[in-house]
Every structure is written in C-alpha cells, then in structure tokens.
Image 1 (tube, one colour):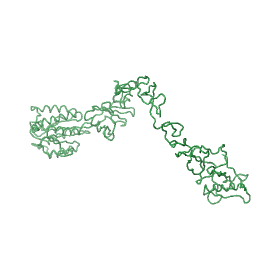
Image 2 (cartoon, one colour; image 1 turned 120 degrees about the vertical axis):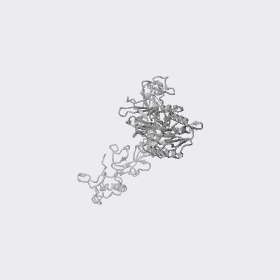
Image 3 (cartoon, rainbow, N blue to C red; image 1 turned 90 degrees about the vertical axis):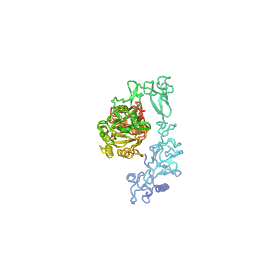
Image 4 (cartoon, rainbow, N blue to C red; image 1 turned 135 degrees about the vertical axis):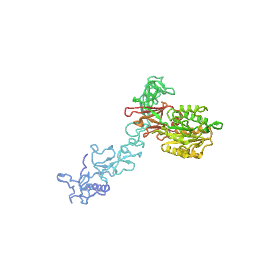
Length: 582
C-alpha cells in the first residue's frame, strides 16, 4: 500500500490544513494539533535528504513533541500528510491510495478496518460499514449507492461486517440453522444441506416405490433419485414382493417370516440370537455361556395347631378341615415362589407338651409332602388326626420353630406363621405366654418374623396381639393379628400373608460386567425395560447381586402369567452370558 502524500504548507493549501485540524480534534481529545514549522519559511520541516522525521508519518502514534506527557496522533501537522476529505460525503475517506494497487477493498472480511485513515479515539483504525437492510446483524457486501461509509461508529442501518448472503431475509445469515426450505439459510453456499427436518429415505432398486428394508438409508429434505420414503420392500429385487403380512417380519434372507422365527441374527431383537432351530431366543452373538438367575424364595414354616379343639366346627365345617384346605390352597398358589415347611403341635414324638423334630422341614419342593400329609390327616384313623394329646403348647411349638435351620440360613429370609384356634393350655414347659413372647421377640431380632393367625372365637385375642407385635409383622389395623372366624376368612388370611412373602427377586450367578449391557426377557421373547424408579420393570442391586421386578411386571410374575425369566449379558469385553430363572 502506498504511503500518504506529503504536502507543503503554502497559502493554497491553508484551507485543507484547517479542515484536517478540525477532523483531528473530532477523532481524539488526545490529539495535539500544533504546527511545528520554522517561522516564515512556509515549508515542512523535513529531515536530512528530504526524509520525513520520526513521528511525522500519518500511520501510528507519534512522539510527544508537545512535551505534555502524551503522544500525538499526528506530530507537526503542517509537515505531515493530510488526507483529502470529500466535503459532501463525511463517511468516505480518501487516503490517496490507488484502489487497484493494494488499497482498501469493499469486500474484505468483517470487520473491515481502514489502513491509512485517521485513528479513532481508542487508537483503533477506522472501519468500513455495510448496510443491514433486514436487521439480522449481518451486512450486505456493498451499499446500494456503491459506496460504503467509513468511520469509528456504525451509522443507523449499517454493521461492521459483510457476511450476509441475502440481506432481504433476516432468517438467512451465517448464524442461522439450515432448514428444509429451498434457501441457503446458513450462508455456506449450499441449499438444504444437513438441514433440520431432514427425513430418512430408503434405497429402491426395483423402482416400485417401496424402499429396501435392509438397504442404504440417506437423510435429505426430499427423496433422491432411486430412493423411497418407506422401507416396506422385503425383496428389492422383485417388483411384486413388497410389504410383509401383519405379524410377520422381513428376514435378512429377504423373505417374510412369522415374528419369533429367524434366518439370521438381525431377525432377532437385542439380547436375542437366532438358534439353530430358526427361532429367536435369549442369548448373545458373542458365543458366551449362559449364567443362571435363581428366584430368591422366602422360607416359611407353618406352625399349625392340631389340638383336640380343632375337631370342633365353625359354620358346619370342622376347623381341621378348613385349616387343611387353606394350607393346601396356599401351597398350590405359591408353589415354587415360597419355600414351605410344616410343624404340627402338639406332635407325636414327645409326651404331652414336648416337641421333637419339625414335621416337614422347610425345603425346596416340600409343598407336595405337606399336602399329602394333611390330606391323609383328614381321616380320623390317621396318626395326625387331632385327637391328642389334648393340650395347646404354643410355647414349645415356637421354641421348635426358632431352631429350624432353614429359617436361620444366612442370606435368606425366614418367616414363621402361627395358626391356632385357642390359647396356651395344659403346658408351660417353655414359659407359657411369657416364654412364647420372648421366643418370638428373639426370632424377630435375628431377622425371622412371625405372622399370627387366630381361628374361631375361642382364641385369646389380647395375647395373640402381643405375639403379633413381637413377631415384627403385625397387621396395620386392629387387631394386630389375623382373626379368621370361618373357613373363607382363614383362606383369605393365609393368602394375604403369602402375597406379602412372595418376591420378584432373582439372584444372578455372577455379577454383570456392565449393567447397561444387560437384557431381561419374559418367556424368552418379551424384553422387559429397566426402571430405576421402580414403577414397572426391573432394576439391579449390586450389593446383593439381584435383579428385582416392580409394579405390573412383578404382578405378572406372582400371578404366573409369566413362567420364564431370562437374563442376558452383553459383550463389553468379548464375553457374554445368558441367565435363565424358572
């Protein structure tokens, strides 16, 4: 760029010098406008050889020639070059430069600073401004008049950049997002590229208007040539084969198959593999072994009164018959969901008040033996028919229950359920009512809770309430124990207790490497979502290494609507496993 032209101070240039001085004062209060000419010479003070002394050039700040402790924008104004100003256009600045020889450009990148003009009050160069007709903060390349204003502040309707590609549309500027509308919204030179609102389009090789289910997918504002807006074509090589019937899937083999069948892994959902039989089943394509997930079962010992009073009738039904029927129904309803055991008192092993071994110890699969024993005991000739000894030894019966090994097994939940039609009578070997309360309290302290059920009108309601409270699981309303006055009420009480005990917990054989790569299925097909809010679905407890179902998902398990649970592990480290729980 050419330097500014120096002019001599002659009478003919006096007017230009005065005008320059006025402009200098307007641009900066810090400017010292002081002539430094030798008196009477009428010429500029040039250095040796006619060179301009330091500080006399128009560009940059000069030395403090005036001695006032500040630098002058222009020192020795009379000796320095002063740009000519168009008096009719205060925004235009003539620097004396040749616009075709490196001079200021009208299309420089924003902001456009002017080299060679007078500095602004903050010392920065003047800027060129561009019209912003649409008010979006981005200016047009050139003013409609063909000339752009120059200065230190933007005039009204102008901005300091020329980056707008459509100054008649405020929605179009470099900060805008591209949309599907036929405009270059973001001014990148392309229309509708990577636009918001793009739709997927699917390869349609055979041109029948149906896209390939497994073909290429592109996103665009409109369908490209050879693409369709759907993926309903199961065989894109045959015009007449398109959408599969309802309920079928389009296999990777390009044939329609009933849901659940497969010809390849992609025919199955997450956590499922295509087995050799051509059906989708829980598993992992990584080829890892399955790991079992066993349902966590509570242990329940039924402590049943078989004293002589159980032969009496309630509403025409023997209490013993009603008790056998209710326990039979309970063990059938929760078979495989509760681990049962049975203790009868008084038993037949020790005289009168003593108790020997538990009649049917708590164990897996004990439901059948319990039902068989009780059904046989309905016969008055059976040894367990309630015809003696005629005592009610609740204290020693609970003492026996407290020692049942499975109720005290580490890591398992133990419960006792006392069912009696009377009160402590004829015995006091383990301390009577006080002893029973102490035993039940100690059991609860060890984590073994006791439910209490009174059957008929001859029970000691106050004392049964004390037992129930000591047992840790009293009813929330009075009475605190379960009072059953007839056979249907007894059945309802036992079913209510069973519902409280049954769990929806499944213990995993090993901890999953990454819980986010775990998939859980009902009946080998339906994937159950994880729900950390515990409303409906499953969640994992790392401390106990268990998967627990909640809400309707749990209800479907307890009602036996769902009979199979599968837990499938993902493959974050190249291994996988599937878990199955009965």
